Length: 189
Image 1 (tube, rainbow, N blue to C red):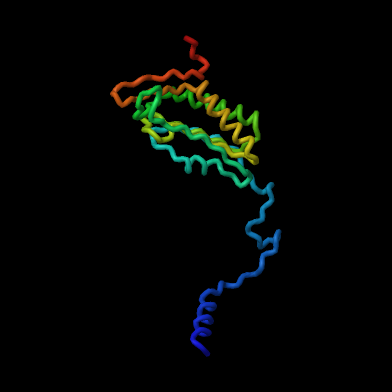
Image 2: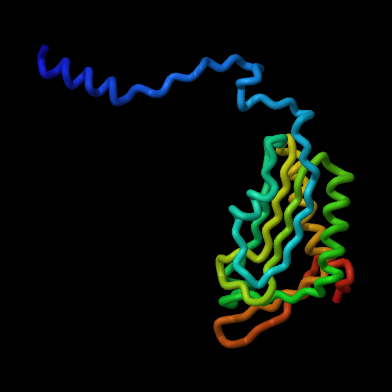
């Protein structure tokens, strides 16, 4: 026996996997087989207002479903400028009982318009530094068109109807509460 044969033989013995019976698709031994009817997953609407930093991964994980082929996201972040002024952070306030109620209505409207599975709407309150998320909206659906349209509708409607106020904090120590031009109660000046 040459040393090459011994090494080869030793290597193949180390790499052997335990033997298991072959799986037959659709058999009782197939751990991955489940009828769609067996999966009972109720639609979820997850709404959260928090002073904590938002996590895109956390929010997207909340809406993932084995029944869906799409998860669409909108992530609104603090940008570092507005009309030539350097923005250092945003500050958000909300009238929580009404804000939560309005977001529930948005979720209900989405479910009437599109076949979606899960919806998550997370919004920051308090100070939000530049580049951090202020709002994350995630929607899952069987096909991408429904979740993409639902996310777009959700952010547009949130900005128009939900009582959330934004104050921009500028580098030169000034600040300005921003009127949301999309909000239905705003008047034209």
